[in-house]
Length: 295
Image (cartoon, rainbow, N blue to C red; front, side, top):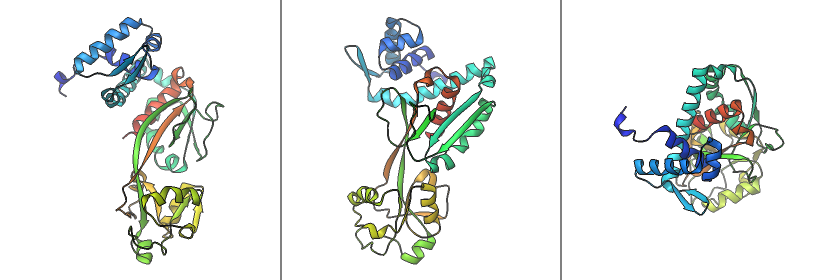
């Protein structure tokens, strides 16, 4: 650890995070229980210590600069660590109880969420987690779930959202498929190739044709509303499927095809009800999800 490289204090970083999340100096001051001039001084001191401008100020509103955006996730990770240190030291992490319901697509629920459960069990052994594998959007405002993992940012302004990662996503096939049909190549006729559609075929064609793929509905003999079923169809050698590199890496039998096409970028958003700010159990799970999914 290079201790000399740490040139700011936690109070400054905490003020920065509060302003970034509350989106105004006055709201951040209220959230932290300090005065607005105190927040202003701490942000100015942090900017001076780091040698960067963190916010653009226009009247009463503030917006993160690119430097601020670059630092935001790191400071959130620091905040999670500080929160867990406080909870652990006081023994309160052991008393966090109740249920937290997480909704996510079936592939995310099956392959990305379970690895975080070991850390969650260590942090809060009395917490119950209900993982709802559902590709449909559940309504957090109606409390159908506490936290949602989504690939589209919700439009409701009274939900808390956080972009945790953007995964590279590309075409994959198993050797059984390529041995039978050959390797597809951009620019060649793809009439003999089969793709597995996740959801509506016409919508899928709307995504793929702009990428230069000359496809028709005949290229989609197999369709499923479940991404796990889509993946299993492809794993049995019946077609080509689109999958994130993060999940595909867990299946060594798959290899990338149509590599001439630039990978698609799929964002992952964490979404929570406003209770996130007052519920320790939801905050704990939200932060652990953020850390796990951003790796």
